[in-house]
Length: 289
Ligand code: BEZ
Ligand code: FE
Image 1 (cartoon, rainbow, N blue to C red):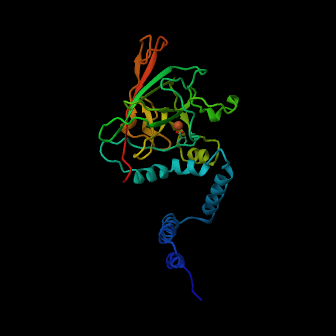
Image 2 (cartoon, rainbow, N blue to C red):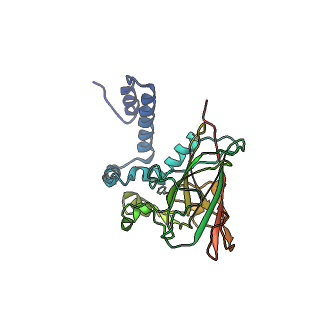
Image 3 (cartoon, helix red, strand yellow):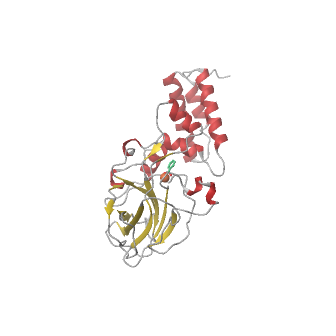
């Protein structure tokens, strides 16, 4: 009859998984066991704290629905999502950097012609985006697909606005032309808090952290023969760039929005008296052949 104690328990539990048939699952569960035990020992976790953690994780699970994933949000605010993203997307020189997908990607968007307005019925400062999709060698990629989504001027996504009745707004899909170019019109999104009315919000509050993300536009860019790119473009000067609640900002993804007063957009269509130009090119890594 083995006698377990705080000195031998970790290795006893690790050995209990020795017979696991999948080498990868065995590696993951044994490392998880060692790290969890090390955490309990390092912090001398009290019984009360253990219970608080159990209740917190229980509430996190109970907050998940088919429209809300509180565990991913927890991973986001702990920096785990960005760490997993970083080690899985080590980019070659010149390739556009990645960042988190976020909860507001709703899968493939409706295909729209270049220059289309993503937010014709919404009010806010108008934005024109013009970009090119290239390979890392700089060659333009014709026929690349760009899914775009972003918040409105109050920081809300369409999925957070029941009054839209599920109609898509500030999201769409574009295809690059023969020169690898795409463009669309929309409005300038605002910075916004991540959903913070659940356990993750409670955690941020209890630890003195804010829930804000700097304003950004999301992109999912794909092209045959290349790895799909999930990223955002942020705007310089945003007060939340340094302290993004989900650690998603990278210098190379921050751009200046150009203030414009020309009476037409770059595609010749009429523009209001002032609007912002967002110019950004994406460079995709080749898929392993
Ligand atoms: C977002 O940018 O949409 C987002 C990302 C992570 C957590 C919450 C929101
Ligand atoms: Fe977002």
